[in-house]
Image 1 (spheres, rainbow over the protein chains, first blue to last red):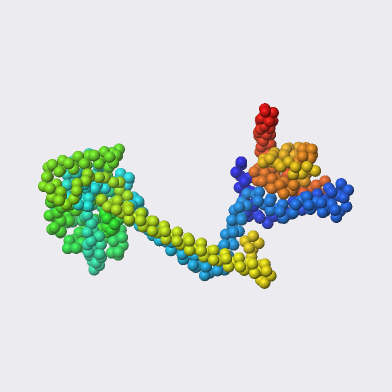
Image 2 (image 1 turned 180 degrees about the horizontal axis):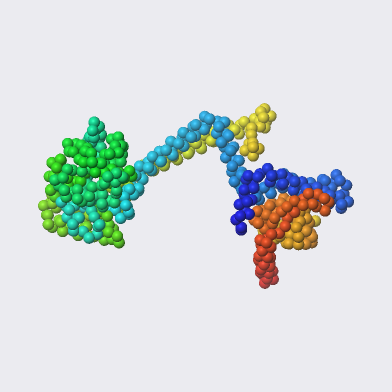
Length: 414
Length: 110
């Protein structure tokens, strides 16, 4: 069917309603008059002709209504009329409206809140370049899926599957800038961290491999957009010094606004190259050299064309080789945890090494609970409507019995 | 009168209206009379079915309408077949002939 005439009709039906109605009325009226004339011509007297014609018509209003029903947009119009009626009734009963809105609002709000949380935890890809190629590496036997820095270096050097691996850990710190002090979360990350993630700075630059190698140079830090704002959004912050716990760091840049780090549920506020941090955090130096100090989560960027399975197989091979080279590590861990093969997961939501399954279970449970809440809210509103319906029916009954005027009904209340 | 003796098959009303208008523009009563005439009184289309059909077919683009003067100098709405309406009539006629032939054969077959 041609589209244009239908659209013009729809337009006319909706917005030139008066004219359409007028025309319809005239058309039907003319039809009736002509029918009467025809009957008179056939030899009936005028009164009888009129009676017969009216019978044949079958009710002027019914004919008009059936013609209206045939038009495009008729349902749209009745729907609109019903909507107006509904709004009018809501305005007329503020108590009922408030109760219904509040109940449904609570139900929907709870669902939205929980879903937002779950989305952030499990589904939302991190704000990085080509997030589909980023995977988290979960250490098999190691504690909570974490790795030691020494092992990270071995994985990083030996693998062929990744463009790069990065390791990081988070720590709550105190950040000082001028007179200000802020509680913040620091992410200590390997120097290649930003390169692997593909995250840029909105001001200055992110740190690179060069910063990691320059052991003697003053330590650098990249601060998060949120922290930068909390510290007064200093336009000239690049090059200035901030204090992170006891250490002092030169700010080289502010990270992109959307980037909140990758570790854990806490968004990170400041990033410091692991290789430099040990200058100021002595225990970190010890950790970096200790193959058994498994404190770092690891993630990597798959090379184009390398599948998750290929990468997993290679990482498991490296894992076994390391077991043989450093048997002491295996011994130490045998007591702690049952051995599991190393595993890879695509990065979505926040990285939760080894925790994904538990978090998913809790998330499902929460969704079910808030789903029930919404269901209850709907049931409550349905009950309210039923109660009101009952009252309205009583009024209508009283009105029909002649005690009160008939309350309006959707069909006639326009 | 054979009114309502034969229920109009779904779709046949459109075809009859198109056929009635194929001979020239008519107003509503004219269409109804023309249909009664060409079907020898078998079909008497009541206004309750006629006007919805006319309006629907106009919106489908098969008919156009305009105000005109009736035989008795009365203002009436005249309907006219469009190009699309002519095509529709041709298509429906062919369909109908195929179907009626098939049904006639089927009924004879036993």
